[in-house]
Image 1 (cartoon, rainbow, N blue to C red):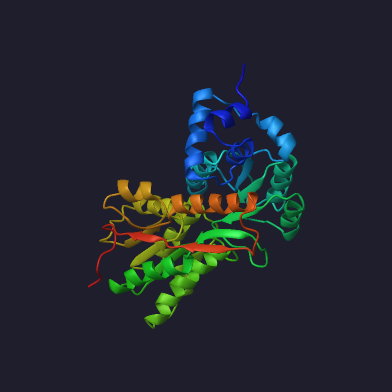
Image 2: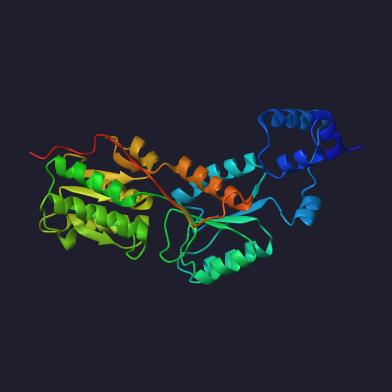
Length: 335
């Protein structure tokens, strides 16, 4: 006969309500937690999630919405979100949606709400206030990762994009480079806009006039990174250094440099972003900006858990984490 919650409580020496609180992700005394975990393991107690969902109206599942599951950022962060939620007894339903589809995010949010998930973590592209209102009406909290959406009040975890772009540009300036190409995503997204602002701020502080020919802002694809490098190197006065401010942009730029046999850093100093795989297999090792992906995923999951458990019901919070520069050998001091 299968063990019951009553059996677990009896063996652990605690009340049934304490066991129930533990199973549903609530905080219990450390001593009680250990006793309950030991009892669950000894009795091989299995939680009936269907019955629990009918009783509590909670399914212990969270939706994770990522624009593209082929994207480095999305795939990387998924693992850490899932690990954090799983440790608290939650399963994840993973969905992707097209960035070019104006209703893609809305459709998937509706899908997840209809699945009666308890919360959503997402990269918010083409998200509307009405989507957030619909989720709130269904008592489904939403946490944004990667970018903020102006005028939409949701807990958000991102990085200080302006700071990391400023520090990378400053590093190139400190090495004597005054013609610095910047490759970014489409303008209008605060991730892109903040990185451009950091780049411009560093130039302004060094009293270097910005050259519009050295600013390439399109989509965050390998093709865009490749095209940007091609356009830069065809200029009458090409840049002596380039900063590619995204993973796929970095990959595309590196493809062009390899194809044209450009020697880094002799022919061109280069700094990439996020793509640690390329950074460490490329010769010489690339200098690269790195987001704290693990901490972003863990922080977003913990913020959502606080909302779902009712531990935090205040105003929307925004946490901006610091990115770091992994210094390689791809920047040469200009003579």
